[in-house]
Image (cartoon, helix red, strand yellow):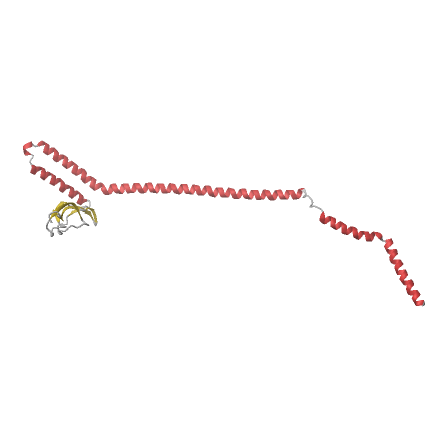
Length: 230
């Protein structure tokens, strides 16, 4: 019985101490609740406005980007101008080389043709002298044979002049049939003889060649079959 009374007294004393502690320190309990409310209000508050130092840093960063862009654009324009200048210089070189090549070709042709031109000038002078001699003769001395001899001499002089410049005359007299590669039929002569068909009837003008190149084919008249009389 005594033990029970003592235990009850201890319980009452503890409860009393606990109530006394809460009453004496009410601020501590309120303090924890205030701390929680303070944290919530901080999370819900908007971002703070940047200060002047941060604004200056942003401005400096933007300026550096602008300077870098300006430098790169300047370098790009410089490369572009150099490319245009190079292309213009290259075109000028091409034009100059083309002009020099044309001049070289003109000079080469002139030098190559110079012997032929000199020969023609000489022939022109000889024909002039011949005409002067013929004019000085009386009409009764101008016989057809003289004209024929004169014209034949002119033709021979021209052939010599061509030969001096590497151009030779040729005729295909060793072959009677038409040779299309070296001969050209100017006229056809009808015939009833089958053996004559395709053969050369008459040679009008020799051909001319320079080395292996045919400049002009020999001109001939060729026999063809006369179908009206067959």
